[in-house]
Image 1 (cartoon, rainbow, N blue to C red):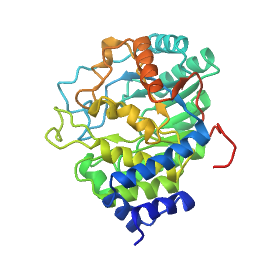
Image 2 (cartoon, helix red, strand yellow):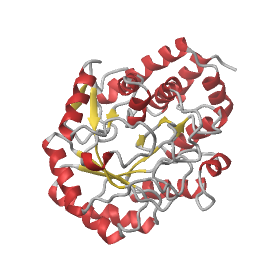
Image 3 (cartoon, rainbow, N blue to C red):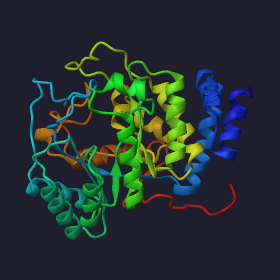
Length: 355
């Protein structure tokens, strides 16, 4: 078996490793290997995107959810969750505020909430598209029939985020109730790509029962899917779930996996997630230095932010949108990058020169 740095070189050259090689690389990483990886990740990050970090204005518009995923704070069975829904006017107000602050992508994220019918969702997407024709609209609404995805695309949505969470069927079943399956989740992602969405997937790092073999399967699936976006973040327990007492994912492993994703698929849009900032005060900055190039500040009204509690101790629940963006801008400038007013589409080439 080749050594970790040789495997990183192979990944850079071929964009593929065998399952056994993925496992070996993950299990035999170290500080020296990580530094070697992050240097390569930044090289590709700078080649395609320069030192520009793209912002997505996150609008968490409902925390009702029909699903009962064992790790999630807004799961159906959590009777302590304080439920809310934003109406169309509130959602559009979030967009108006965000546009004035320089956001050119809006992310509508919510639980799988049946109150928001197909017609209501299409109307909201259409209103945003008509009001902000120069902006990208990203949806993160969970698993839906292909026809629903198609109609939302025709209404004006550009992108869709659907994290597969884990590519291994057995591991998936250990995290989700019986009615959900990894196979159906993956099929939704293939449907989204076929329709023409810029498609995003991702997984939790350090979820209960996760092994290096599971992570290897995640990378193999992502390479096969070739998504435009991949969002990964550490598993952070929530006190009102069956996994309340489980250990969380680590910053160190999450950063290493971000670097591997950048080297494997150099054009990826890779968020430095809120969960990273939750487990480490400088988590998002470290994520950018490991290869990430997207941040997702919250545009939701402060009155509801703490209610969208997927996990404990989520950061930035009290800041106004302007404060949140200004704070992030300062943080990112402190490490030599800059927030940009741009849709931040996939594969923008900042430097067409030789690598």
